[in-house]
Length: 377
Ligand SMILES: [Zn+2]
Image (tube, rainbow, N blue to C red):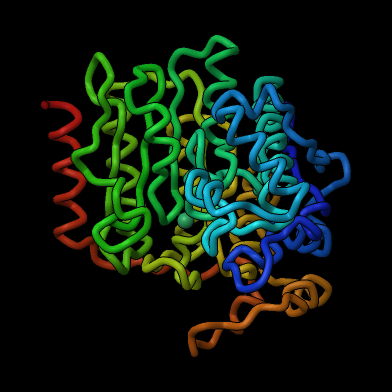
């Protein structure tokens, strides 16, 4: 391995979602500022993001959808027909600099991360992981499905056994549907059960894929309040099941941070210690892969968690305290807490205390049922 690379850009500062959208917050630029202030990122490790080419975007998306996104971006409006057909210009997926320019930059960065991985680097694109987008419509804040583009790029490069792992608190419906009948791609996701969480229509246990062989799709839909012990239990069991039936040549990992306890858009209760441990578990089991960001709506929690991921990738010791310069970076974020909880711990230390606990019976049962479905049905 040649070393770690962070594919990122300060350009995202001006490519944000607008008004009251949950993604109006700084994310990638904040991570960059925070890592710089903490002296955790060397200039040679930062790879500047580039936009995806039309050819790369076409690896997953239809031409008419891409043309429509670009037209809407240039003209700053959409008609009622376009809104209904492509699901853009809505409250969920609004017109903003993030829609076309931000998404194309994030997708290009994912292709860069894939290329860097194939050259022997450990690459992380925190702007990636937009797993809800469909080939011809936006969905769940996502316009361009960069994980799906990464998978198809790898297929074009000759890979025949690609594993996609998704740790986001929401199910990866756009990616799953894109490869549901594909025996060369295994999708594994741990997420909030669609019985109570977005995207509601996908992510159930019974969805095991429709390939020629056995099911190549593993969903572990989890109850509210998932703690570190439960999340790590599900991840370990899930990886065991995956490796029983699939020998991945390469994997893509989506690292959405919305499973963290601070995140107000999910009901999971992970500490960033648990999040980091999950990342380590995957690398211990599979070696290195391609690392993408994902959801995450609490900017401070997100920056801290991805900083930990970066430390691990770059082989840096995790600093015990957040220095005053980095603390100032976090304090200057314009973000209002939704919950009346004391979050001061976030500004002093980088690594949280673990949120360990009992592993509930229903969590064990879901993993057992998934195993039976995948291996014996
Ligand atoms: Zn999410």
